[in-house]
Image (cartoon, rainbow, N blue to C red; front, side, top):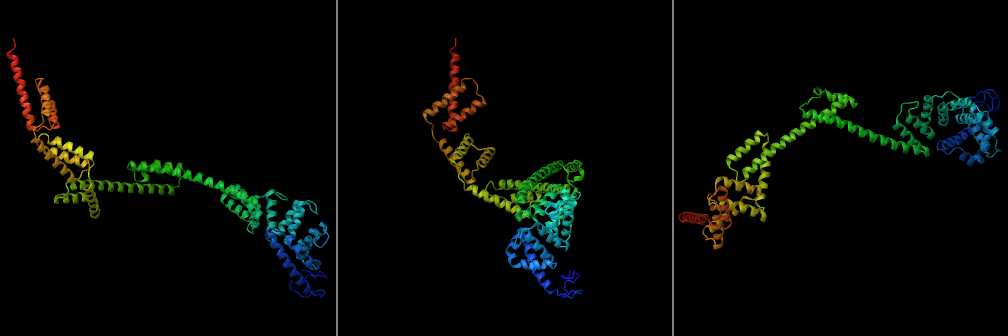
Amino acid sequence: MKCSKCQAEVLQDAKFCPQCGSSQADIDSMRQQCLTDVSACEKAIKAGDGSRGYIRTNFDEQLSVWKQAAELGVREAQWLLGRCFDEGFGVERSDIHALSWHLKAAEQGYPIAQNYIGSCYQNGEGVPHDQAEALQWYLKAAQQGYATAQANLGWCYDTGSGTAQDEDQAVNWYRKAAEQRDSVSQFNLGVHYEWGSGLEQDKNQALIWYKKAADQGYEKATEEAKRLADEIDEQQQDRAEQIKETQQRLRSACREAFADGIIEIGEKSHIRALAETLEFSKEERNRIFAEEKKSFQQKQREQKSKNASMKFRIACKRALADGTVEVDEKGQLRQLADSLNILKEDAKRLFTDERKVFKASQQIQPTKEVELQFRKACKRVLADGKVTPQEESELINLARLLRMPNEVMKKIFTDEVVIFKKNQKTTPGQNAQFQFRKACNQVLASGKITQQQENQLKSLAVFLRIPPQTMKEIFTEQARIYKQGQSDAATTAP
């Protein structure tokens, strides 16, 4: 710093001037006061409020100190006094005096004042309009880390104001200011990221910087952040759909290869070609193929196990069909389980399940319709008075089809046997005999009896509840009468 009297260079902490011996103590005190005031102004500026409010509130008490310190060469005081002349606080407003004091502070390297001088040259306020000169003052302040000057310098390079347009330099200075929370620079840096000017395009980074500016109340940044966020979401959704679609095509090709018995990717060159066409990396292609291979093999194992379980369950149902499982049947079930690679524990579980189902089915009573259907089948089997092994097997199969419990089946069949035997001992009524005799005469009228006619007569007899023995007697009698009539007719013929 310089002595206030002789202007000789004085060390920062010196108490006396080495040339004239004047005291420097008062200057230090005033400088400290001015530094405190400037610090408050800088905080207000960084907060976006500007220095005007602080200066307006404090100039009544501090103006005399600012004047004295400014005249003694304290640069911070010179800037404060210049701001008073800018606003007319405590002094008559004067652009000339304001510029003069700002210039004195700027020439002493005070960055806020240097930025101020740069803006004066840029806008032609109090000095000739000179963009190149503005750039130089912004540069001096920016190099000292002053964020506002860095933002202004970035704008100069961005627009080619006072220099050749240089987007790389613009981005460089915007970034320095943005990292100091300058909202305009944060927004401008976001713009460069979004459009890839001066750096590689990165919309996600652009959104980050837009949001940072928006968080500080920059309205335009809020609008752009919302717009870009919607755009990115839409692009991500489209990209996700495209990825899903291309992966599905590759996965389908892999499944087709497995269906053809191809298990290794090297054996199916068209899968590699398809993956390259769809722009899959080798790693991604191999990963998808491996996943589909694993899924295919798992499904094969599951289907094989399912088929084996189904075969074993069917065998259990057959063994349980008559209500008991014989020793040889148990041995056959164990052999079947071994051949199907079913574990002993699983075989026991499957058999237990089927036994539970069988026992539960034995408690279910058939509906009237089902019972009637089975009774009709029993009547047909009993019609000729005997039950062959084949007919017995058919009745059992029908009962299973109708899900009829064994006990119920046996009871119904026993009932029908009792009814059949009772009918055998009962003489049919006159009307039933008349209808059956009439049917016999119709069959005999043709002179021969076909197998179909014989079966029809038997069915009619069952329907009319005519015992088989009685049916035979009636038919024999009607045949005798028919033959006698035929003989009499032949004798009386001319």
